[in-house]
Image (cartoon, rainbow over all chains, first blue to last red; front, side, top):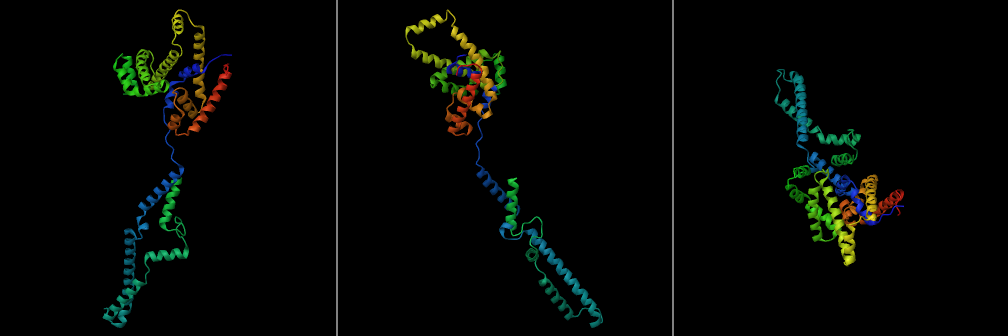
Length: 161
Length: 186
């Protein structure tokens, strides 16, 4: 049996390789609590969602939506006006005989145009009606959730992955 | 300055190598010595010896990890100083002096055996630490090579003190088995 005391063992520790000594110098990085990571991820996802879809959170339509809606309304008005003009032209020869619109015909046309214009539902109203009738028509949307909430959900899901 | 550049200065026998070493690793080596000696004054003297010994060792030695190389020199010097200080306290009588004078004339059989055992233990310990998982190995080194307190180790690795003590205790148990297998009385 070989004999060695603690003093000898302690002195012999210098046999440990310099690479191992160097490795032991590295300090462990501080761990961040998982709950903190989850909360930070959710906050970041919410911020990204707000930045990406600000109009959904402000309660106002985006400029793109407004422009799109205006264009549709203008097109509808033009179409209605063309239809009225067409029908008036069809009827005019019988009434006037000269192919020229009379004053009363012009008033009728204007009234018809206004009626058509106000009879057209707004794009947003149309979308609401469609959503109410068919539920979620788009595959990318989730039924029963606002767009903002959906954006946050998508953001959180993507962060979770 | 890069370690490689400092070592080049040693090889060129340029004395600025020592100054560069002190600037880069002076505080580090002082901390290593202070943990063993528990005295700022003794630690200062010990590190002065470290620079001299490094100057004598490089070349031929060409350390890959200069910091660890200097830590080993400092530690050995500090341990020698520690034992010398204890011996001085223990025996301040003439007998110790006489024995010390005579030990220069004749070899000490026990010290030769100790030297053989120390050499064997060195290789056993190196192999043992290499078999340990990284965290356990690091904890073992910080405690038994660098003489760090459990509190310091816990702070360094972001662990609880109790956890460090448990890991060290388990590692000591493993070392005991290794030494028993190598034929040591434990």
